[in-house]
Length: 430
Ligand code: ACO
Image (cartoon, rainbow, N blue to C red; front, side, top):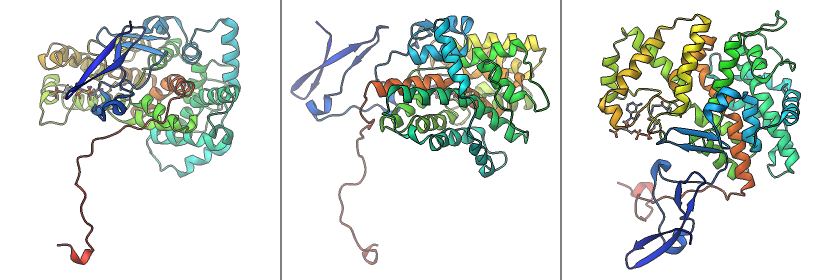
C-alpha cells in the first residue's frame, strides 16, 4: 500500500498522499490540503516546499551528490563537453555521434544575432552592469522572433526557439564584453566548437584570423560551464518556472531568470567573492579578523561563497572547481595573491565551530572567480558566465514545466494587516 501522512486539526484527522522520488526523497502532497481543511501551509523562503517533480537533476545536500539525468557531475566534467551536457539536459540522454553532430550543426546555424540588437548598446549607459544588459538583450530576442511569443506552438517550432537561444547566448555575452571595452564586435566563426567560438568572440580581435586559446583555458571553461549547467529548483530556475507558468515566452522567462541570478545571494556571489578577497588583501590579509566579522551578528558582513541552502556537507562543484583553479593558475603561470587568501579563509572557516555547526562550506562561487580572473574576465562579468553555463538547465526546466502542463504558479499568504476600517475623507482625518 502506498505511504500516507496524517494531519490532525482539532477533532479531525486527514490523510495525505506521500510522493517518493527515485532517489528516495519523500514529500507530503498537500495539493488538496486547503480544500480538505481550509488551511494552507507556511514556508517562508520555500525551505521545505517541493514545487514540482522533475526528472532532470538529482541533488543530495547531505551527501554532497549532484547528478544530471543520472550521470554524476564528476563524470560529466571529466568526460563530456558542455554542448554534450546541454543535449543531455534537454533530451534526457547523452547523444550518440550522429545525434550530437546534428545538434551541434543546428546550434552553429543559429549563432548570428539580428544586427538590430546592437542598437540596444546605444541606450545602455557607459559602464552599466553586464547582467542588466544580458537580461534586457535576451528578453529583446522575443521581439525579433514574434512567433516565439506563443509557447504553445508545435514542438519543432519550440525546439527552434530553444536552439536559437542556446546558439545566440554566447554571441550576446561576447557582444556585451566587447561593447563595454569599446572594441568592435567579433562575429561567430561556425567552424569553431561552442566554447572556442565564445572565447574567440570575447578575446579575439578583428585584426586576427582567430584567437587560439590555451587548451587549458578551453578545458577549464568547458568544466566551469558544465558545473553550472543545472541545479534543480534554485532561485533563478524557480523564477523561470514561475514566469513560464503564466505562459510567458521562453526568452522573457529566461530574462527573468537572469535577473534572479544577478542577486548577490545567488549567482552574483561569484563577483562578491572576488571583491571580498580583494578587500581582505588590501586590508593586509588578516583572515582571522574577517572570520570574526562574518560571525558577528551585528556586522552585515558574510563570508561570500560560503554556505548553501541545500548542501549541508560539501558542494561537490566546489571540490572540482578548487582543483581546476590550481590547474589553470599553474599551467598559465598566473600568481594571484587572492588565491592564498581564499585558501586560508577556507581553512580557517572549516575548523571554526561557527561554520562547522551551521554546516557552512565553500560553494560553487568560492573559487570560480579566481579562474575567471586568470582567464582575463573582469569581476562584474563573472555572473554572465554563470548564466551562460546555466542556460541549458534553465531551458530544460522551462520545457519540463510546459510538458507537465503545470498550472500558473500562485502562492498564497496569511494576511496580518489592518482589519476592515471605514474610509474617511481627508478633511475628516486627524
Ligand atoms: N557567512 C556567515 N554566516 C553565514 C553564511 C555566510 N556566508 N551563510 C549562512 N550563515 C549563517 C547565518 O547567519 C545563519 O546563522 P544563524 O543560524 O546564527 O542565524 C545560518 O548560517 C544559516 O544561514 P541562512 O541564511 O539561514 O541560510 P540560507 O539557507 O537561508 O542561505 C545562503 C543560504 C543564501 C547561500 C547563505 O549561506 C549565504 O548568504 N551565503 C553567502 C552568499 C553566497 O555565497 N551565495 C551563493 C550560494 S550558491 C549559488 O547560489 C550558486
